Amino acid sequence: METVATAKSHGGVQGVYRHPSTATGTDMTFAVYVPPHAPGTRLPVLWYLSGLTCTHANVTDKGEYRRACAEAGIIFVALDTSPRGEGVADDPAWDMGQGAGFYVDATQAPWTPHFAMWRYVTEELPALVAGAFPVDMARQGITGHSMGGHGALTIALTCPERFRSASAFAPIVAPSQVPWGAKALGGYLGADRAAWRRHDAVALIEDGARLPELLVDQGAADAFLAEQLRPELLAAACAAAGIPLTLRMQPGYDHSYNFVSTFMADHVAWHAARLR
Image (tube, rainbow, N blue to C red; front, side, top):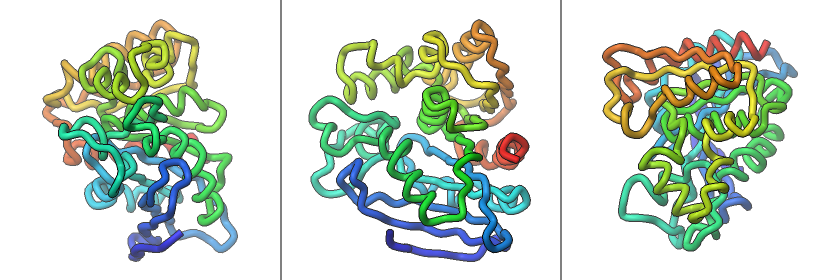
């Protein structure tokens, strides 16, 4: 693992790191904020998955999480949204290919050689972080924005024994039922919609996946709300399954990091209460 940069912030250290990934066959870059702590202390960790077109840098630069993480004593890990580089398949559109991995392991050409983001997020990166940082892997939470909210929800629902807490900002809750998701899941996983259900939060809940509770913030002025995000589908699925969902529709807020940063401290505090 190579250290790209480090800087002190709120008494802790914000770092950016790069490593060769066996899952993607490329170099991958990620960011870790370690709050101030006593030597030998193991800290809870909050994983953050970013949205379409983003890298680790979007939330690192604009997410405003460091003060809240320093106060709560939580390590914050932000990662890239796809493999990148020469020889990595891409698509001319911004909602497919590099920057748009959708947190799945692709089974279709030309994506199969590198697009293994599910394995990267659930296996490779946690093992790397656990070995290099003072993380208590018994206390993990996960969150994300938009496509990353989709990833956070599906990973938490699939691995409930691993995560004590899960939340999301403006997530794609039912990708099988919206244009972004249908394009990506069809492209990466093929035409068999049964394979899509493993990467669709609403479908996972319908098929029996459960979590103790969920927190979702959604901007009411989000331009993607009606066509791509559809939080009412998650609310209906959670109600039918008996999953306590706190869905907060935030008047006037859009899909940007102006929205995410406004409610980031709330999410960090929510996770902290469940990771103590």
